[in-house]
Length: 416
View 1 (cartoon, rainbow, N blue to C red):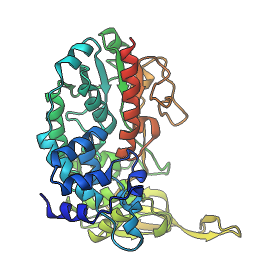
View 2 (cartoon, rainbow, N blue to C red; view 1 turned 180 degrees about the horizontal axis):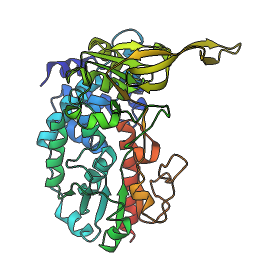
View 3 (tube, rainbow, N blue to C red; view 1 turned 90 degrees about the horizontal axis):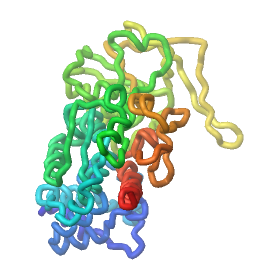
């Protein structure tokens, strides 16, 4: 067993009212995990974590721990918090190799005629597949990529999330009877109507957000300009030159800034219109980005992209009498920040493929699917969760809402 995981389990106070657990979107029982580790009951700990969160092994690596469990650990007030991520990843990674994937025959027999279609194999799609397959439902995953994982595979760099973990999850899903149909786009050719005609009793939409947001400035169509979500899908195919500017300040911008350095770029620069304190990225991600040698340029607002680089105007920050922040742009002068390539990291929105070709599913002004608290869309039998409903959020948030949706789907299918 990892000595670090044992040490962290021993340091854990096992609080009666654990603030760490309360801060976790899926209420992971962290004190119990620590107890089981100390008792060397790793299989039991792994079962507990997986039953609560099928993506526990992934969340242990990429969750915003500083804002959730670890950031709320009582030991954080006077010293070093418990490294919950270390314990969780060790237990979950071990369990993934040993988990028993055979679904009880009674469950299979009970639900054999209630086939479910899952559109998209990102965090929400994978979560639902595990939860519903475990109940014996026949599950088919449709994904327009050649491999499963969605944003986990194509939007998070290998150095943060090894793709081998997703490959191992695929093995577990297939052992549970899940069918995976790759390179299949649901929407323009195969529609939701076709799925119901072919006998699927319920459909889950977990297509995520893959349409990059534009800055709406001149020059975004230039050949040396790229969008972050597109770059992260396959960094090897890009020839970026020696100096790259990344426009944005979130976690995706940090991922891109670090990735380009690992793919031959000499200078990686994050250009942000606000100050260092306003960066939306996690503090830990920012620290590692700086450690990798990425440069930061603050208070620069892009106004145009040229062949030579980014034209920007300086911005400033102040406060009014009530202490409210005021950002101002100095439009009197424009400057050039030279770069060989520019990558725009301004978040993403949903693709319209599946919704535009389907009747009865309402969306909001941002194109996100409208659902009730159970994940039911405005069309009977169609459910949705994850980023396609909430916009770009964390993986653990997708798991949280998908668990509620799985309960609702199970109830719906039970009463058919």
